[in-house]
Image (tube, rainbow, N blue to C red; front, side, top):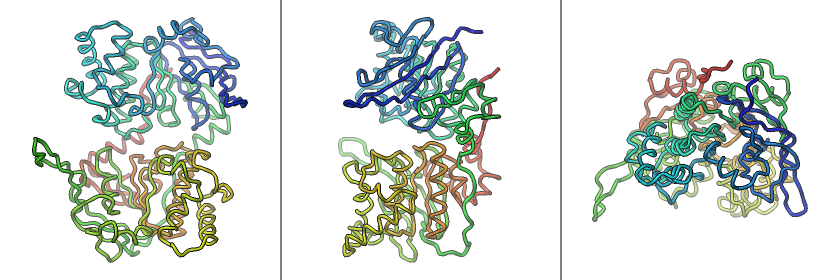
Length: 539
């Protein structure tokens, strides 16, 4: 057998808070051979990232500790190693790509400085040599016109470009092992496919091993040779990817494989009333230059969109980042300025300001992408849900408000007794249910769902999709569902708009779009979302 490049044995991780010690990883063992891709799979809180961070000793010590275990890399013990040994390994022989590149990159430093720093620290390169190598790396990871990007800051790059910069930094010193922690979770399906292909090409070119951490089983099927399934801090099943996916033995693995969003929305009457419509809707942002800040051009975020949404219907809006999906949703709800015609029921609201829109806000609700960032950490669940009632139903008494809060929580499957707890005490899926309850308590007619499942595990996504379908049927709600996840869109939408560069390139029924797409762009999106072609040769 090949000697493992990385050998983790009986690794345990505990965190201390005051006098309380909580063991979050228990006796985890796995190997990664030279040039091999091994996946760590599991839901949030399963211990994947904590195990990976332990390899490089990046946990917040002394709060974190290792009651047991060994981490041997290339014959050297890393667990408990001194700082000099760890510095020689980190970024040099083992590199790491993190989940969210925006928070991993320094917002105050340019791309050139951040990539160059890795080269200067580890290879001792001078400015000119570091710049030349930086340009070479940026070109290799697929950043167009890399010289023009050297002086860019992270916020000036797209999500895919930021992730490519992170990959360039990670590969600057040609590491033997790359740890990739959910590197494609926040990316569009087409960008995700590009990043995965790039990683495989670089892996083959450099002979690099990869430890890939994800909750997306589709990626594991395509990328990894072997998989370790984690639950509750333990590895509950492991083996070759083909064997584990063909005949999963552990109930948790079986659950993960079977719980991808599936099914279809309930049928809706074709002649149901139109709730929301738009004609020739435009949102153009001026580009101003010069001393006098004259308008020299426009960014056409939404450019001449027509649509209708009927009661009981879900209209899915798909497209890559920057296609105008979210801007379109905000414009329809009069949360950003626009031109064209917007009608809610029989009333044109195109020119309505904040005061005129206020009475309509209870009918037009929003559920945002990030279930933690959209909930105030200083308010209890009861206060969060009650806030809308206080604004829109000021004469409603305390007891009646409390009954409405309880009803809304029960409707989304949460225990009403938890209503006096705070958002940080709930899981991501529970927080999203709270966001849905906050919208439902006002009995709206239309709900804008802006990427409501993108931050959730697969099994939780499936639960939220099922919940949304049930609530829609019960209350005859109209959904405007914005997402780049086509599997979720297929499970929830009746009709679909495909957007690119602010325009609708194709629209039609769920069946027509997924079974017979007319436009090449639509076919590319669908291929990227549902393609399970193996990207690396697995023996």
